[in-house]
Length: 153
Image (cartoon, rainbow, N blue to C red; front, side, top):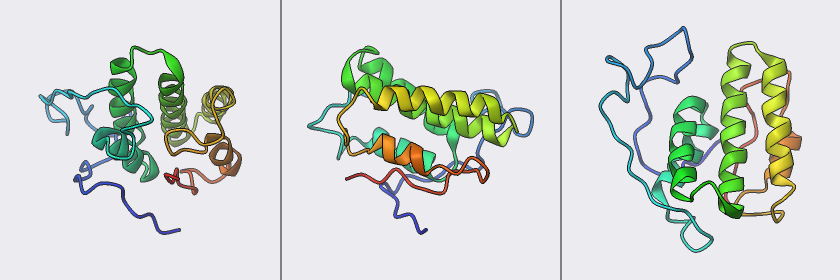
C-alpha cells in the first residue's frame, strides 16, 4: 500500500531502535540538541496541526520512537486529560508496540496494542481523523511493522 505523506517534513536518518542506533537525544543522535515546542490539539485544528500530522507520518513509516516523541509532547500540551489526550495516548501505545515488535518483544507489543484498543473504545469511531479500532483490528501481529496506515478521514 502506498502511503501519501501528510507533511513535507524531512524524515530522520534512521528509525531509532535501542541497542542498534545512537539514542536520538544523546550526542550523535538525530534529535540531539533539538527542543520540541508544540501546542495543544483539538477537533478544530487537527487537520492543520503540523506536529500531529508529522507524528502520523513517522508512525506510518515505521519511525515509532520518533513518533512517540511528538505525540507525547502534544499529549503534555493537552494536559494529559480529555478525549484528545486519550487518542494521543492510544497512538503513543501503538508507537511503543512498534518498537517492541522490532525488538522481538511480541508479548509486550501485544500488551501495548490491547491498551491502545481500550483507549480507542472510549472515543467516537473516528476522532481527530483516526479510526483507531479499525486500525488495531487490521494489524497483522505476525508481520510487523504495521501494514495498514492511520489515514486521516
